[in-house]
Length: 172
View 1: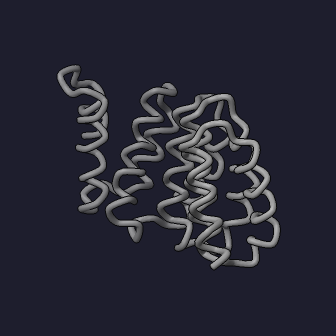
View 2: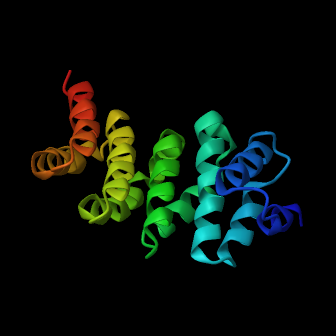
View 3: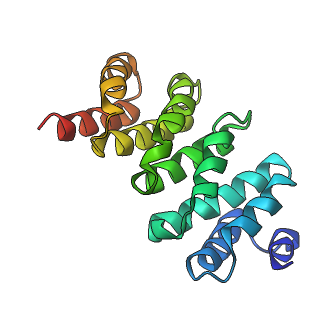
């Protein structure tokens, strides 16, 4: 399996692994299901790198995502590893518009991370929630007041800005 070769090659830094695998995903050279199956058997750092590669690929080509990917990243939001949480949230932000039926579950797993002690986890969560809010779905009835409350108590300006920008767009 060529994924293993990338992870075994110590000359390739983490970002290089993300770019290599991400490019394989965008060109359909590597099926996402195969990468996720591999990721499930890896230690947290390599699993996070796999999810980051998916994030990179879905930012370029969101349409490569399928429902099983959305299911996977919704579940991995509950992982203990902060990097897995934040990469999963970024994937959700990239692909939320493709899976409106799964947004409620995504929101339920994102909201606890909005109060995580890690700024990057909170920023990525704010990004995903903002992208969901901008879709203007039925979920906004529940999400809008929660995001207003989060933006008021958020201490980090970058995270707060994610919420405020989305709220401005929705309230136009």
